[in-house]
Image (cartoon, rainbow, N blue to C red):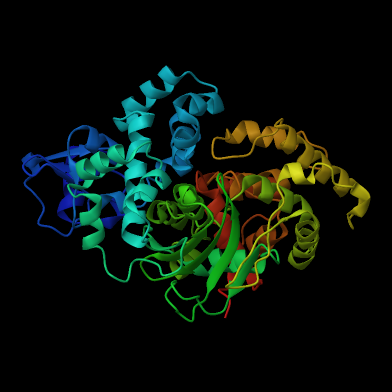
Length: 500
């Protein structure tokens, strides 16, 4: 979009927050860059240039606006819609792969040369993987500086910088303030009183309808791993709406997150065993709640169908509830085959008790991390209280995941991974597509055989047979996963209701 100067100028002049994250405005006369919705008086059009990423602005010598804080914009929805090399690369960078494994590790995961990845990123984003990761490190550093009392040296290494000097130079270059000045300017209540706890706001593009999003997570919560607290814990706003909490398996340790919906943001409280996991934890929480989606584009397309229009108008901004761990969700999808939500939770809870990693949670009832595939690889099928065929499906899945023969992650190629899942014994279209929708993040994944979808289709006068419904749903592409959320919402199932 940044190449359409006229459209970008109109967005800036109208301070349209829908375009935050789509592009960034660099002001030639001041040397700063802003989000489109910056509350400052818009500069003259001839003084504006537009860049596709914060990293590109920084490479061009611009510093971040202190008023609109463009580094805190929602992420571009492009990376959640597409499955090409650039989108997969951006999802891996957000997951901290460059900081942990370098550009060579990034390239190895994607199966391309470093030169080819750099060439494509420069062509589309105006910056290479190192610059993009650097911009992300700067944002993480700012969060740690403003929301914790960590010493600056600890902040530097937790944010992924190789030295304190590099940390200081980057912060000064990006924000035109030293780390100490950033901390001085931060609100006095921002720093958490509990060591290792970070409180922050996760931005999103409005509208966001939280009922089915948090309702789904709460209704399917696995005891010990997830829970819904009727009242938000201290540090997450104390609002009676409540909060969803769960444990997180992270690269350097583990964490516990509490997430609560607010009118203009998601309140987030993270307790991390290692602060180096902050970037990854934020990325996975945003992915879990689908916060980088473009609800205006989604709803506009779905509203064009007369059958869906009343559903969209009633509750615009529905998101797809996703996951923080793709392998975990795949296991849970198999456990949930042809059983009720309650039965699936029971099966999952037994696995957690027997094979999960214990964690301490002084604030609630979370007790374990969900077991990793390698912990389930030696699972005795006879210990599973489920039909023999589903036991075989589960053991085959965890063995393939543990061996690395099947990879589920932010870098997954959606069509290829779906084909690999369908090749596993006991995997039908419903299981493969629900994994594609909620674990891989494919916005066009569709569930025409799902009972709830078929029931809703029948009630709305849509075709209810899978083949006919798939044909009708072609008009909803590439947002069929969101159409599923609107169809599910016609039912009175607990997944559609924000818990009391």
